[in-house]
Figure 1 (cartoon, rainbow, N blue to C red):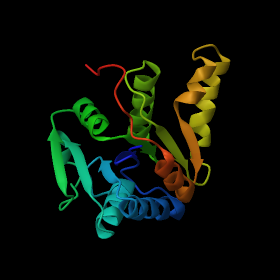
Figure 2 (tube, helix red, strand yellow):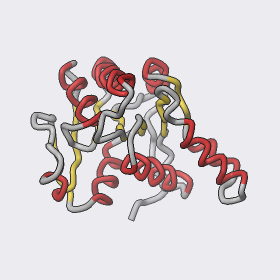
Figure 3 (tube, rainbow, N blue to C red):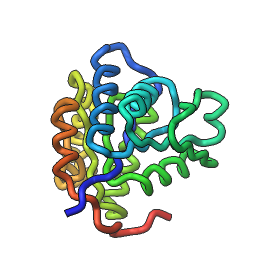
Length: 193
């Protein structure tokens, strides 16, 4: 059985206030490199995005950054990122990251990370893909996200099966162990237009 070969990591363009966030991003970058899992990320050299990229690169990992052209002027691209793909929009960035990834990993982040997570989750709900979505809970950061999904279910805006669309994994070691167990997705059930 073929294993996961690439993972898109959605995370903050800031490092956050808890040192555990950056420490976990470093641990994830090292772990992905050690497992020969290509890192697909937002292309920036700032925040947790930059931390995980530098860690993966420093550990000899393969990585590809995907950044919209308008952000090239605002965010500092991670130069030396292996491959840097420049897109024409945020949507095309997410689509390209989707195409390059066998699985999705969510670390702490802000509104952009929430957007990426909920869009990829919605695509899975719509059966446009069946790629694993793993939320790495660091210091309880994922609890409000899960609470929001539970509120949607409780209020009749989502089916209980929404819980099956993603997994919560407690910390980076458990996340890396879970990635090692996942088979590579065989095919996409639908098409992203």
